[in-house]
Length: 76
Image (tube, rainbow, N blue to C red; front, side):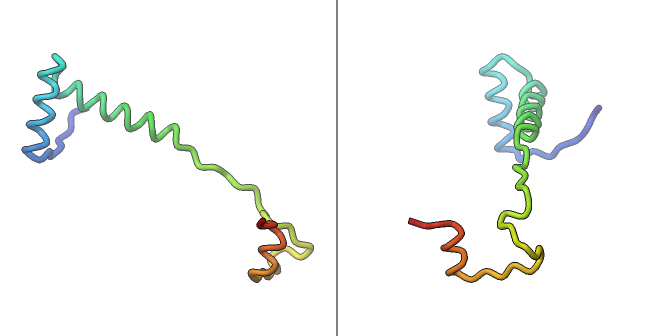
């Protein structure tokens, strides 16, 4: 697929210089960067928390104040 991306001149000069130093094309560097970004995105999976964290005999009606939180968590 062909697309158009606007890259600031200074950034493009850096990109072109890096490509030349590595013996690659600008296109190869851009594709490598996109692939790396997508790989990182796939690794960032949300951590699911099972609910409720604090069990209640009457769900949806739990009222906590600081004292109750300290009792539940058990701070040192």
